[in-house]
Length: 212
Image (cartoon, rainbow, N blue to C red):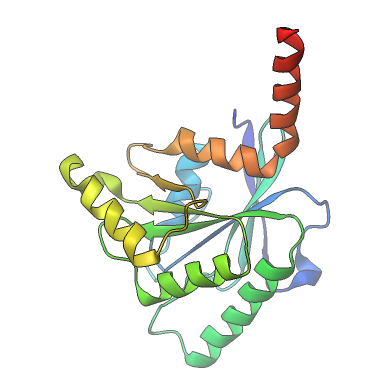
């Protein structure tokens, strides 16, 4: 998909602030400081649209970014989970907001759960994946920071992620690097297929027509 432009839209704290245009939404979930902002910036080839923070846990709202491609969609950066310095009350409030958004938001087409490939998934990572799959929500695992590991160690760490999370056969997993761009095209293919399934149908129909 060709990225024409991208812009920050709003930091939303509840349904009354969510966009009402019905465009597909792709949510990014992950532990605080796992690299969600860097992932967004690499996907859209912009350096500083999504601001990275030196203070993990700072994101307290759903941050909407409108992505202009041949079709329009939103990336939605949700508050990071598992940050110890955030109060239990605040974590509980974030949890309720995220749960309500993910379970009830009709335009939501895919949740990209971001994992640090260098380390075994945390208990919070496992709980999030179990929760998403329990409710049969569309999820893709993005294993970031692949460039921080020697290529020879990729299979070992990828297996560690799959085993610890208990990856189901229908869950795609993409190794990604925000530094090198590794996995970018593969991830965009998954985003396009889930956000715009009618495009695949049109392509298949065209192909069938050309064969007859």
